[in-house]
Length: 79
Image (cartoon, rainbow, N blue to C red; front, top):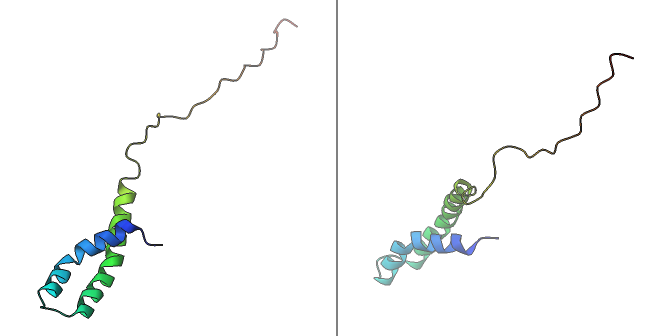
């Protein structure tokens, strides 16, 4: 399913074509084609942004926590 943010970003990218339609410079089919081209481009760009910023804000301590185990007693050398 397409995220609403992708559709909003695609609409923002195709806004100049929509404005040219309002001023009656291009046809509605060209506006829709430009919007349909903008949707996968917006999806790829936002997926890349989500990938880059995925680790921000996480608080992880460095290293792996371990629990101590009791040591085995050493054998007595005199016996």
